[in-house]
Each structure stands twice: as C-alpha cells, then as structure tokens.
Image (tube, rainbow, N blue to C red; front, side, top):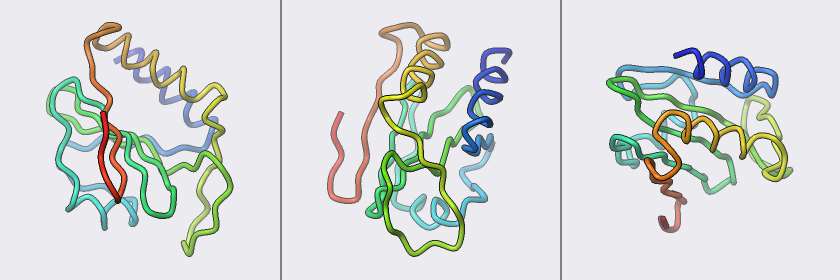
Length: 123
C-alpha cells in the first residue's frame, strides 16, 4: 500500500484523479457512461481504455478493489465536456511511472495490459 500511496501522490501532481472503489461505480461522469460496456479487469490485468474522444483511463484490480486512474489525454483534443482533463504526454514520466507501479505490484512479467478502444481491443 505504501507504493500505491507514493504513486497516488505523484499522480496527484499531474492532476489525474486516482479513485479506489470496491464496487464498479466511479464518480467520473464519462467513465460512468462507458463502464457498462467494459468488462471488469481480471486479477493482474490492466485495462488501458481510450474513448472515442481520445480520453484515457487506466483500470485495474487489487484484491477486491478496483482502481481507476483518469481521465487524461495524451495530446490536445477538442471534446464537448463540462470539465477540464489533464494533458499528460505519453513519452513523459507518466507511462514509466505506471509501468513501474504494475511491475512493483506483480513483477515484470506478472501482469497483462489490454488496450480497449471504442472500435476494437488489442493486447
């Protein structure tokens, strides 16, 4: 839990929300609307979700807790939303930080990342 708190503190500096939920219900309005179409992540599975508007989320499960990181965008996009979404360049610190989190939790080869888009999904 110390590592999760560290990552949570670093992510908060990026203004990215980090929500822990024991139920599959989250306060983010956009994610709430798409969560009905997304399968829940399995143990040691990380879902990288990219919406039609190119808004990103990372969803995973630890024990009985679902953790949602997002929303964030990796490049400037024009979307009709009622709130501001943080811009996090994918080649910056964010991607390695997220990968380090999962490697620390489950080992270098102990997890699987699944990318989910509105058009298709790919591993």
